[in-house]
Amino acid sequence: MAKLGKLARRGGLYTLLGGFAFFGAFPFYWMVIATFKRDHDLFSPLNNPFLFNEPPTLDHLRLLFTETHFVGYLANTVIVGFAVVLITLATAVPAAYALARWARGWGESLGIGIFLTYLVPPTILFIPLSRFASFFGLQESLWSLILVYPTFTIPFCTWLLMGFFKTIPKDIEEQAMIDGLSRFGAMTKVVFPLAISGILTVVVFSFTLSMHEFIYALTFISVSAKKTVSIGVPTELVRGDVFQWGPLMAGALIASIPVAVVYTYFLDRFVAGFTMGAVK
Amino acid sequence: MTSPARQGSSPGAFRGGVFDRQETLAKLLIAPAVLYIVAMIGAPFVLAVLYSLSNATTGDPSLHIVGLRNFRAAMEDPVFRLALRNTFVFTLVSQSIVIVLSRILANALLKPFRGKWLVRFLVLLPWTAPISLGTIGWLWMYDSIFSPMDWVLRYLGLLGTATAILGPETNMYWLGVPGLAIASVILVNVWRILPLATVIQLGGLSSIPRDLIEAAEVDGASPWRRTLMITIPLTLPIVSIAFLFGVVFTFTDLVVVYVLTRGGPVHATQVLSSWTFFKGIEAGDLAQGAAISLFMFPVLAVVAIFILRLARRTEVV
Image 1 (tube, rainbow over the protein chains, first blue to last red):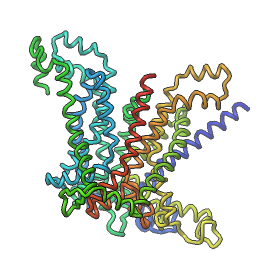
Image 2: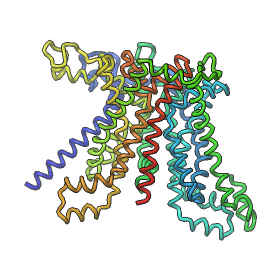
Image 3: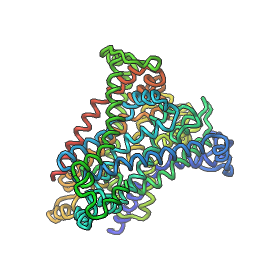
Image 4: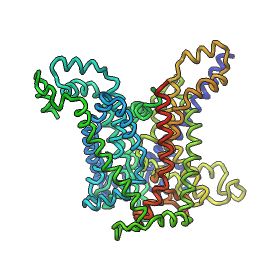
């Protein structure tokens, strides 16, 4: 009897998890199907939509890569991502270190203050920032995105790194200073290498967050060749009322999955940083 | 950055210089981040307030202060009022569902089972993939002719025959009927925020000390009582954090609405952020757009204060 009860509980658990997994992943399965389905199969309402009723095809992928700007979107996204990572590292790493180490009272408040700016949404800022962009002649330029994206990566990454630096014992720097390094030297030569996993996390998040961004890219960029994937796919692959569903789904799939894999891997740290105040 | 460090490594060099004086060095290191934030968040925010009090348009962006006219005009606009209501409805309904579902899912994920990494990956996908691209998948699922949901309903006989419960039409037109469009947008918001809330709840649940629960077990407390007296009070701060972030992300988001419906049919799914975009950028009315966007601010300020309180309070414990 007890064994039966255990079996039933197992079954219940798997059903529950299966249901949630299905809910989360079905839209992506739906993209996979559309990516490889022949048009004739895709656009026949009587066919079972979940299966390949005709042999799969690579036509949509070929179309996506040869007849759209998709490769360009990917390249733009990577360029913006790398530049944002560099700006974020250059500003957030030193700030987080200083806030975690030296500034007790006001540092704590300033750290929280910096994090709270993460809550100021792009939807309040995009109108004035679009004026800035046109004032400096950056409209339609990737530079506008590169300069604006750190507004959400710096607050978040500073907060995340503060937590990392706090876990590194103070004695290590003091020892290094006794050995003849300056304070700055101890920081760059001893502490930063120890914080490498935190820094790597910041690299991943700055990159993925800038890849996810939609509103600024939509506002600043309207020239097709300059778009990033997150706006290029939804706005350029839909031509008026003509939806090229196959290539559209292929584009969405190819751009989402790699980011999702990397992001998942680092997600626990992301959340630890996010809720640092609350979980401690 | 490396050259002063190299000089500093020889004993005595830079002793008492800038790179050794704590206070000065701390300020120098913090300055770039603070300057960036002031210039790119502070300044535009002030400008948004000024725009909202002016009559600026993209054609004539110069600032002439005209007072609170824009706010009054927004309030009198029925589309704005609809957008304001929708923003609250979408946020509260979807976040209430998310809190319940994420607790159930987090509890299930705490148990050991085979294939955990795969389930975790699939469950997290909606949050980790770029939102605009995930929403594109939904757009195709809500298609007015080829929706797989409609296919299943037809297959089950619930749709498309003269006697079917859902009507004789062959399709539901998910995004074409106001009620269904609202439900569709809420569903995608739930789908999108659920993973984040789940992971945050997981963190909260696994931080409860085991011995506390075991002690209660020894004392003969029932599972229900243990949940009520230990789990819920101890995870309340973290659940609140999950809820507040969900609120911020849903309240200020325009991607789901922009990609799925552009606010349609006839503004039925319009929200503050999408209306800000259509007014302020597409229609070029900077002043109106800024005023509409600022209606979000009081809510966000309240959320921020709550987060601060929670963070402070739990840190003391």
